[in-house]
Image 1: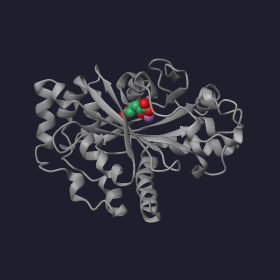
Image 2: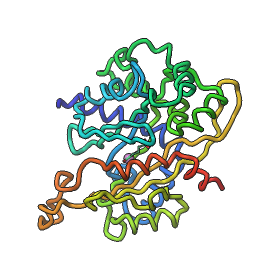
Image 3: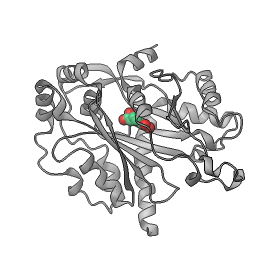
Image 4: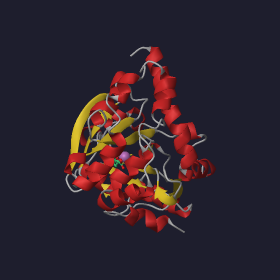
Length: 304
Ligand code: OOG
Ligand code: NI
């Protein structure tokens, strides 16, 4: 990977983060409180474990379209995940170097939805007749950065949003939010002692008023016990629909991940431990619950 590609990737990640931070108030609230509590001296000290995106599994969109952006920047596609009940597929992507976050990309299995939901989705995406990623110059980081927030289809009308919401909360989220960054993830194991376990960090989060996703318990633990994850629930924020109607809908959220050192590296001195020595990848059962951070059953608990 040459230097230019790396600096372009930095710019792209920054272009994703700036609007995300603006629309998710928890991001600044958490980093400010981390600074006050001496965990970090600056927001840039936070190690971002991974970022996540959602997309629609239809022609010219979906994982096979969206992933092209990150494959271009040296990411490698890794394990697949399948969520039967939520009708989703996903992959995770390994970054070109340890400096960059992993990426989790999921897609809705649109063809498994009811004909009614499929016809609503196709009404919005029918005009997309070629892969939109192919029409951007992937070497131009400004163009790529702008792509994530560029409308690829018309804003939905409220009635369509509500119909989708009843059948698939994920579908409703994507039809409104498109490729907005779904979450970034604070690496808990990188924090100073006293905060570097999820139990301790969650206590801190709740002390500053962050509401955690309780689906499957506040801490979701992988089968091997080495990947533990928590997440905030997304705030319900007013959204304007195509007919001018407004309604509060869920946006993005923040995740927290604790990756333990793999058994074969347990006796390494602490200062020798890098990302390569810790549990990598994701866990289906954890992810299944984390998706619900934007689902009404969780988000309604955050309405004050
Ligand atoms: C992604 C949920 C899964 C993880 O780390 O397993 C996930 C989403 O809500 O789109 O982030
Ligand atoms: Ni995640």
